[in-house]
Image (cartoon, rainbow, N blue to C red; front, side):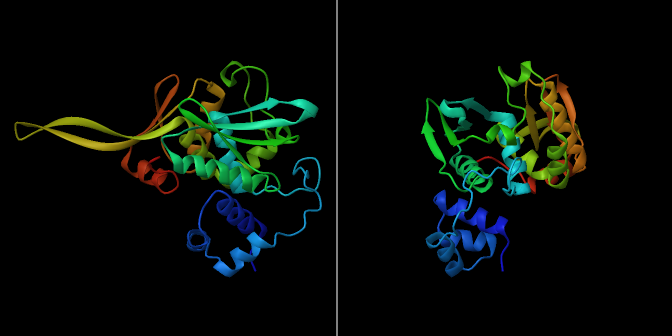
Length: 249
């Protein structure tokens, strides 16, 4: 038997265009089971069920990843009849990240379709729901760096259980893995050395502190070369982030 989270992740991946074979290898679920889930979905008793104000279920790892994406490149917009659009802006140069954003939104809210809207230089991954503000109480007027961003106690509890997923969302949005270099004189000869490091940039001091807190939770040392930039450069720290983030390409 498979749990509900596994089923949701599988259906989200299939809906995002992944083959049954690829999803089977990823999750360890047989293709016959995946086919059954795809072709005979269970009846939905409450398609608008909100995990915060009704009887819905919130998959913690998927939500932590989506929270990181929202804090980095996401926004909520109020539409007619109190429906909100959740939009995650994704660089179109990284199709894997676009797919992942669509899959994780579908995992958090599996009863509604996820749309991809082409814009100039980027793709918006969009989902419509009245209850998105329930899941993202950080929603408000104006840019995030001009208002207070603080996690609710229930969000803190979720992130504390899977900080890796929040960090993956944050670095996939506003971070990168780059090659740094330095020189050293060895035997009278100047030699150049290259080494990888992670960078995270955000104008919001509150979001930066959330990132720092999550890094502390996973035991990754960091430093602040600038007010709005965080660096992770120690070899063992980079290796730790490679376990659950890695290059974007």
